[in-house]
Image 1 (cartoon, rainbow, N blue to C red):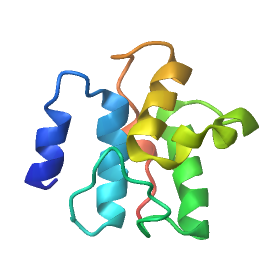
Image 2 (cartoon, rainbow, N blue to C red):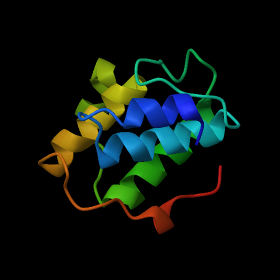
Image 3 (spheres, rainbow, N blue to C red):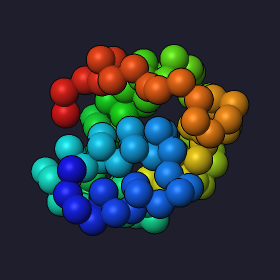
Image 4 (cartoon, helix red, strand yellow):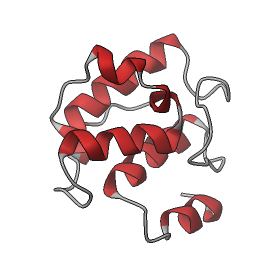
Amino acid sequence: MCEKTKRMLDRPDSSAELLWVCDWMERRAHGRPVDRDVNYIEAGLVDSLAMINLILDVEAAFSLRLTDAVFADPRFFLIGGLAEILVELRGAPGASQPDRTAECAT
């Protein structure tokens, strides 16, 4: 993980969900730093196939199912926004750690 991303994640409001999303996106960015306010589609980090992988990976890692309401939420397309949605879906910040073995290779 690059230094810029590490500094962002060192903030007190960072969560396990944000760490997971940043890690996933940074692998797509080939190690370039990612920012929580980035629209990952507009930045070219996620195309149609990667979107399917992202959804599958999120659902597997966090043991949840994303609904149409999640996809309609404008935050879904921002790195930090997706993390916020995951925090809300999981019930509370600091919930159990995501299953990192459930991630697909990207």
